[in-house]
Length: 348
Image (tube, rainbow, N blue to C red; front, side, top):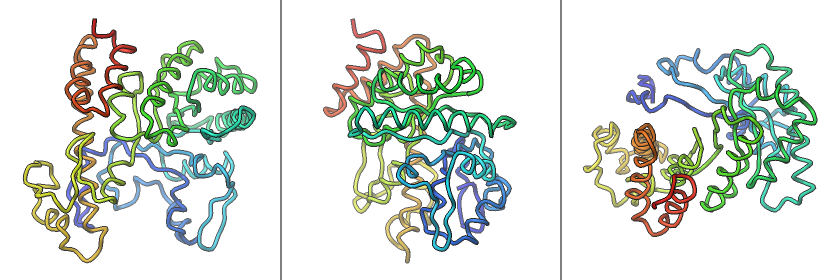
């Protein structure tokens, strides 16, 4: 994806201005201890295969996957996981942005369970700031909550451990997590971002950027409109795995019904990659890899269009975008109108 000849890749580096990975992904393929040591032996940028990548590297703590298990499990080894170990691995991978380890909430948690997770996250925050004191990388504070009260509980628990003014001064941004279970409920996602912004404003964190962890592509314009600055999503990859060829942030068509002629992206104008997407390969990964890349390009181009509207004076450009791109789709129209009326000044 950055033009490395050994894997026959084209240069798509313009679409990789920022890449996220996670400490927990080291166990996705049940690797051996030898492979684990190799993965953590040198920073990602120092590896030959990533030569040419000069974007930002955001390394998540993996708190969501480690929620019920404090171990990183491989095929023949285990690594005990705590905040210090997480930060050690983040450093070894060479990230530019780190987040603290956290205990994500779940929709069916009781109030007591949410408070307990907030307490544990507060402890991780204190340890994270201690072990990363000399880092030159940016540090993002991870919070969880679907409404004002839940989010404020996390900040109150942190304030019990560390002075909140100190926390503000030490962190470079805020990452809102725990929303993956709500990814298909756009109404609750909108509420979560609106109320997170309100809490951050009230607690003096309004000057810090807000990153939203793990949202889906179709929600991006809505969440940007109500206050999300950055976000990460693997929907481009999962869509490809499910045989979906994206035509926009909202639209897709079955891969086996696609001609590829109407798209001018670097993937669909490459005869070899088009041949692969048509199934002329031995392995499924070689068919779906180019599809994933096409899907990402579609999303990135649309985000650029969205950013251009945001940069115009006032909110008219963003309102026009939501109306033209979401307002014409029945399933999105209600959410687009809500965002305009509640966060962008309304229609009248």
